[in-house]
Length: 278
Image 1 (tube, helix red, strand yellow):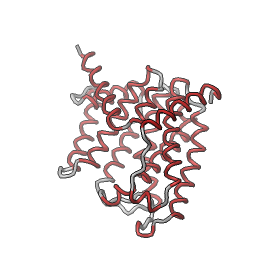
Image 2 (cartoon, helix red, strand yellow):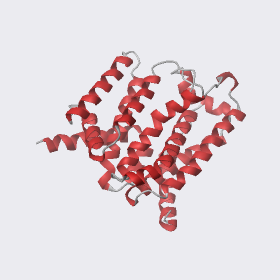
Image 3 (cartoon, rainbow, N blue to C red):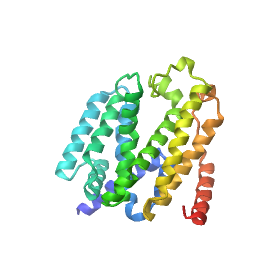
């Protein structure tokens, strides 16, 4: 029965999420069970593309990404895929009528990672939109369950949150991106002169986006509100740790949040949520 394959497909996306991100896994667990599988499906798909461009060195990454693009198109058109992650993703796209343009923008940003790009303000915004903001918008279309008016109202806040998450990732991974992948995402940034002043400017941008994103989180449907709030709090704790480090330290070490601390963040977030009702 096809139902068994569909269950397997979502399970593969769930395991992919758990393997690559404890923060998002815990955040998804805080969502209403009726939408969890769809968010796992989106994360699994995003992770698949990300692995191609970031990890599959020694292989023809451009060809692999092109194949993913073709396989995605076929899965969406035929409403089935033999790739379990693509199968769960295409079902989610059709169920919630996720805009195909968001998927195209995401794959475009992944393609940008295959080439050395000297980012200016415009290309930086373009990359963040495709790599992070559209992912937030895909999730938002699940959260709002077809309510287009609510989606349009919350859209700017989802984009701010996705942007803030991505910029924190850039700071956290600065050492690996620069030394191993030969990438620098921040616009017009000369890594030889990266200092605390430049770091503070980036952090001020993130702080503003976080503040604005929280306004949108408070307006989310009950099925999604706490899960997104929890992911927000995880990233906020990582951001706080990054802010305490010097520019030299984040160039030398990847900043992490231990799982024990994440558990504490989850408990505090739940208590705050219950008391304040956001």
